[in-house]
Amino acid sequence: MSLSCPLECEYLQEAHKREEPVAVSEKELGYPDIQVTEEFIREHEELLLFCIYSLVQAASRTPGAIDADVMTALEALIQTHRTLESGLVYQTRAENRIAAGVQHSFTASLANYQKVREEREALSPVRNAEILATLVFLYRVGQQNQNGRPRGRMFLDLLRHMTPEQDRVDERAPSIIL
Image (cartoon, rainbow, N blue to C red; front, side, top):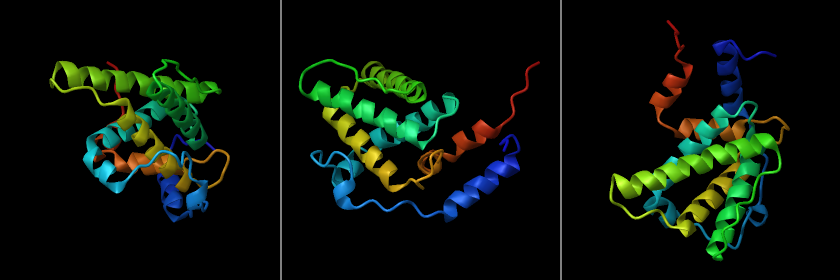
């Protein structure tokens, strides 16, 4: 089925709204040793929104990206930041090329975000522990928002709906080359 028609995409998005995610128990949530509280999320809302936006952009720039690829990229990112917490600099790479593309794009966006914080806003960079906790939170949200289908995009659709409306309008706007 071709998704070239905007109407087909709308039907799929409407269908996703009616789907029930596969149930995941509290014990099955990933990275139980990393605590992420509601207070942390409230205090780091800007970082969370940036990460959501960057994941959506990374997935949209990576042809063929689905929920499983985003989850694999998040796992690699979490392992990388976990290693940084121990003082070692080692980047874990996602095993499949699509997930690696999402990971690479997200990592570049995060580096740019840190640079802008330091140079333009004269703010200190976001601490690695804060990035790690935010990535773990997103991973858990992903675990709880998947439909169990091999090519599912339920998690990505949820993240898209969390980004500013203007960005979704811009994505659909046709480009005219003169």
